[in-house]
View 1 (tube, rainbow, N blue to C red):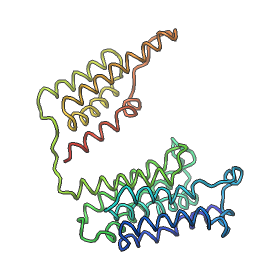
View 2: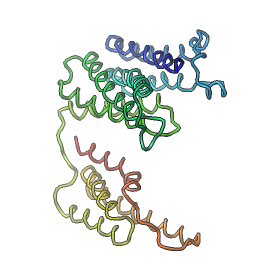
View 3: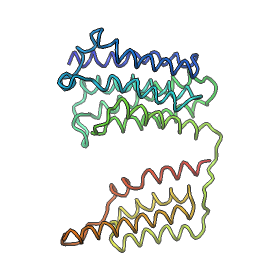
View 4: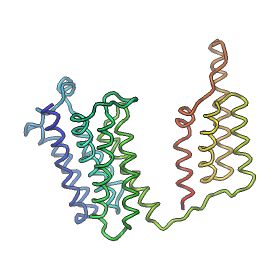
Length: 302
């Protein structure tokens, strides 16, 4: 417990450097993240950092999270060139949000998340609210006057929510990498949409495309490609694709559903599996189409 607490304080400490991003510019910010990478790679182990490794890390002789921390920042510094507030905000979330989640979760986290027993509701809530406050403060500090207060708070909330969701998932990808890149990407998009003086300009109007959307949902329901909830979810996903791409996106979506259903049923027949293939539900529809629907909505916001 003491070692993990010390580890989180060490995780938190470099977050102070995010305050320097405002005055360093792109070359200086990139140099700062590269210097942090070099420090974690060569100096930290020689300064006793190895004592904070977890048992599994000692067994394998490596602590990848220590390297993924600065690697994620280097990637973000390059990807958001000219937008230092995004790097600073994501850095603050990485440093403070993760530490808050662990410390609060260990102290007060009684109820575990249904999808990840290693995480708690309290820890996820701490990540969300601490990240929100830190991101908003760092964006305002790094880019004073560039965004309105409401835009900063809304974009920070979007980034914190995206980071909290990713942080709660039980997957192999290291949190230092996934949370930073996803949260930073959400912040980049959020600031662009909310503060970029952009309007909603869908690629399709209220014409026959609406009827085609409903027809696609009904057809998928009739052929038992999806259940009722899956059809309604698919209608929402298809609406996002339609708004961003027009009829061309609907054609591609129809091909995806048709070919996917046909391939799945042919595979089942060739494998000699009996019975009727179960209809797809909400989870499967979102797994296949949530990204496309979201990108369609973003494309419509021009």
